[in-house]
Length: 403
Image (cartoon, rainbow, N blue to C red; front, side, top):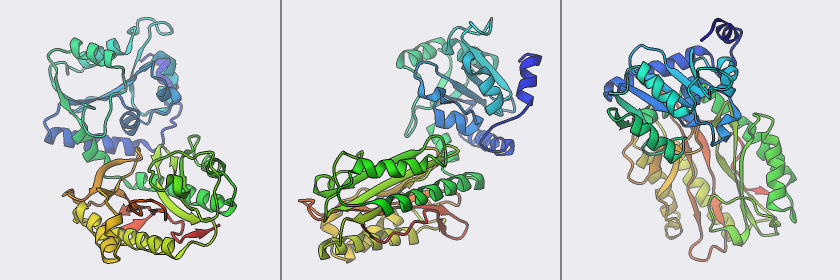
């Protein structure tokens, strides 16, 4: 880095968290790499690069300018590889001191493309014949075209490419207090959006109009508001993860809203329910069953408990209330962080143990079978695991809202 560029980098930092937070993540990664016999990590996906570097750029929305972060397992400094157009963005928004540029137009001598730049950085770090973890496994993706991946692999014939997903999730599943506080802030914004949106919900409003009201409220937390899912009425009672339609809310509809703000790239994700007019006795009975099941799952969360125990707490409650035939569910929740869905999965057979620092959602979801005429029933909380139990971060009430 030139003296001029170094001076720019030292003028200030705009990372989401203090540098100590990123240094702590780096040291944890090195401990895990040593245990898993990895000599380094090569990261390209936004969530992983930002997790370790703090880099803040809308460049992640482009599929034309791949970026990368190389983390050696030893004491050598990580290397951030970005296009030369992001030179000063990297210096001001990332704590990484070693920034490599590619492009060769604005910065003479820079490699012409990201593959050449990443390869050169790996060579300089003496990792071309080492065991390097890549984003190849569960819940990870390489943020580069397949042709670039193949070209990079061909340029590194002696590298022992390993699946780095296990090491990454071992780290990211356990949140620091700073991460938990970011998720709490995101949940607070989501609760506010629920309050505003539900207060304005009315018969005749379309799902998309309701979503727009709530989405606008989310925008006050971060420049990326998050997501809104709405499913209402018999047309959508058997749907999951569906976008809002230009479909009016009608009297008698049950409405499920799944909502999540972002803050410092950390998500919230929880669901609440409303009824357009007073619900029927059947709808109320199904709702009360789902509420009891969801609360039972949350109550089961504490360190040392296997994930399947949370699942069975939900399902046992549904069975005890006589609704088992309607609830054919393979899992009732997931981890939450820089991805909306992260490991661990709260599945029927998961032996993964709950650990302090995890942030989990609990969301038993079911519809009346087989017709889906009564409703879709879905309540969800965001729960931080503490040393002795848990804390619910999603504070908006779970009562059935009557609009």
